[in-house]
Length: 150
Image 1 (tube, rainbow, N blue to C red):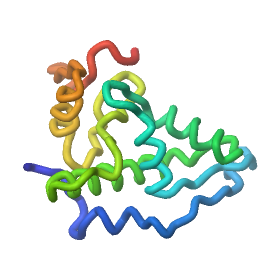
Image 2: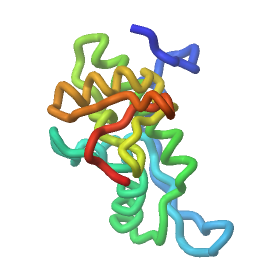
Image 3: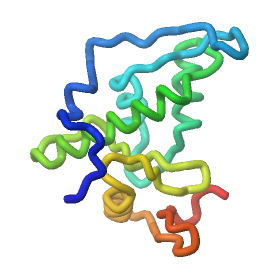
């Protein structure tokens, strides 16, 4: 298993279940913006059924709507997805149920996330196991789910 593990410590403690989400004022707009937690994001990802896919944008929209905010912090959400993915892979390696099926989250155009701690190859393998057709674009050297996005 060759992971792009940028962390020297376990991902599971980074889930920080004790954290509470916050609503802050967005710097650019002054509107309410949700700052989610790893477990809040994991709960939303768990709603994506096997065989289905979603994007970070869709997750952020659903989280904002559920919290009454206008938006969800995109930078925080991206970082938290990496934490959820790293923790899920550690849990799977230990024979445990993963915190969330992070592999069902792809880019808007169907590309797999390059910043995934386990690497796009692992995400591709997990997606194929759920029936998705995933290929590597030789020109762009990126993995992509066929038939998803633009």
